Image 1 (cartoon, rainbow, N blue to C red):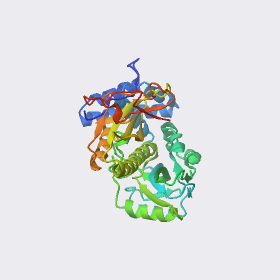
Image 2: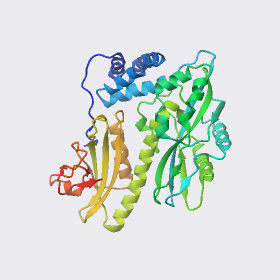
Image 3: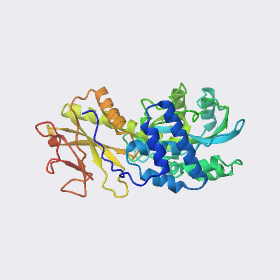
Image 4: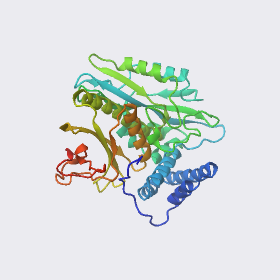
Length: 406
């Protein structure tokens, strides 16, 4: 077994819908050229819906997806559709964002700055290294924006703003880019996701604009150890040092890890994926050190859990637990949320790959989808441990042996 079962519940195929028909046509072909043609047709159809203020039709099609592949394909095309094309010789403003996975710790209650004091230095560094490709003119805001606020901006709203020749609509989006302070709830290191949002003046002739010609098949592949579409350039290390100096304060360690700039519609999901992988790396490193220092090598259980939220059936979680037969009280756990378009194979590979790098041999991939809640203590979330491993090596839920997570 090399991957986990999928805990998400999708719709069964219903009445024909134009957007989903185009999506399925794209997924059905193995020819890259034919797929590109299908994707272009799908993007054009989505743009037409956005232009007619029919965002609800795109949302309804996504909610009717019958698989993760369908959802991911349509969702990605919808985000790409936010990049409205420029006419030949035209120059237009396009919003982009630079995701920052900020690792911070050291003093509980500490609050990091919610805006950078010298954004001009950041802009100069990005321009020097051509981080935005052929773009010669761009402006970058100094606010450190939270992901939740960015996610309230729909691709349709962004597409209509990009289509506004006067730029008034782009200016009205400023409320989505307010600063979001980082407050450390404990002294241990934790990962906080923030974004620097900017506007780039892009020419129709630009070949290396961050959105031009890039293929982002699934945002979950955007990882702190490797990225889809745009690679981290030579600007990453000096930018980390520059941001660390601007965010520094007494008794707090700050490591801001920048990911490649992306068109705004793609940035939030890419940033969340990077934050999750980095958070899991921190969790695994700390939990393994504690286990090896006390009881030796732990057993790692990796299980897919369905969501009991009736409003989110296409979601789930991968829960990773460290436990030991030598200490029944031990249970360190990490929950990796799965969105409706996430690539579960890639997530499983990321988890098992990191565990392999940490030389963990006792990894159990649970072959069956698990419930969200403990079967007896139904108000508590279920966590499987080494106590759930049957003699044949299969994992089964034992109400007396399973851990529960509040």
